[in-house]
Amino acid sequence: MSATMIKEFRLPDLGEGLTESEIVAWKVAVGDTVALNQIIAEVETAKAVVELPSPFAGVITALHEQPGTVVEVGKPIVSFEVEGDDGGPTGGSGADAPAKREPNLVGYGAVLEGSGRPARRARSFAAVEQVHAAPAVETVAAAPMVPVAGPVETRPAPHSAERPRSTPPVRKLAKDLGVDLAAVTGTGEFGLITREDVRNFVDGGDLPVAPRDLAGVSAQGQAPAQGERETRTPIKGVRKFTAAAMVSSAFTAPHVTEFLTIDVTPTMELLAKLKASRAFAGYKLTPLTLVSKAVLIALRNHPTLNTRWDEARQEIVQYNYVNLGIAAATPRGLTVPNIKDADRMSLLELSTALTELTDTARAGKTSPANLACGTISITNIGVFGIDSGTPILNPGEAAILALGAVRKMPWEYQDEVALRQVMTLSLSFDHRLVDGEQGSRFLQDLGAILSDPGMALAMV
Image (cartoon, rainbow, N blue to C red; front, top):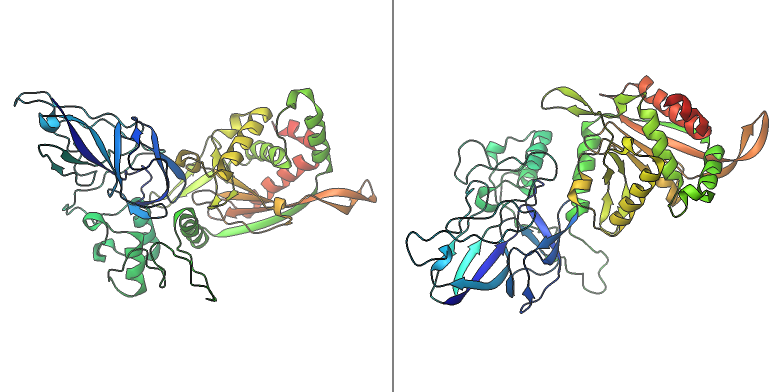
């Protein structure tokens, strides 16, 4: 005989080493019937907006958090009424009945087996079952997602004495600030040490603070009353992550910025020819497309700009591939998604990849996988009418190139002054990895390609 069971779904660990996410929007309402893996919500991590699929097929009975709320990993966010049976969560009346398997949530790891409790107690947050006659209530903690890039470190058990519980980004922050995590009291789930705990310790003592309490602003970030002279907005999501990353980069990597102003008239003429050709019909070609290709060609002779400084191991990591990052301004803040293995792409493939990357970023749909593991970046400030700047390195990268606006200017051409199309390139690099000569020669070669695209033939 069938019975109903109420199951609570906890916010899963998205595999990014993050401890919280913001509910952006619900795609369902109380009373809706949903299918397994149906998208039920959009949540924003510190890196991207992620669609959250349903782990069950059933009826929504409660939405525990409102849009705009920041929720810690492991907290219940939605309840379902699902079909059960009289045998309890194991699915049988006898002691030897086989354990019932829960439906698998695509992308969220292995299926839970046994009594319904997570097999990896040290990795997940507590899952407590309460079984009643009808209806029964079962609280389910989501299994961790498959990591996007690189291994995800297993967290110690709540009472482990191995080391203070924290995530890799928090440990990195503590190291940068010179904080011993053993001296910090965690205010997160099961004593998890958060970024706020570390910053509060630095600011004047290890004193618990109310989460999301920012200078008198409510956790919901309510608008000020009419007539107030200031408006305060909680720092969270992508902007919070970007701010922390830029501060860390600026004060960790010794930045050097060099500038080169060049005549790009031949490149702009080539761009016009390509747009008019049948081979590129239907493709979106921009100056950024050709500059990106030129960067990839120039890198072949200057591999030091495609490296990473590994402080922990005291090693220089040389990338034998190029994941080309493109800085994108989005409504939620600056993101730097990257094109994987861009160095292996033809100009047509690179054009398609750039179009997809920018369209996805502007729509706020960039996946965490496309934000991870970049090796060198480009930021196009010329689209805002800016000529040059001093870009900050994307963390973990050795160089970033800023493209200035293309302007018609008087320029020396064939021993005469002519009106030419001119652009300024701004290259910032990590002086630990790239010497001044290496950075200068890369910029010189890049400028040579853009001043005369035929020079690329001599560098291939």
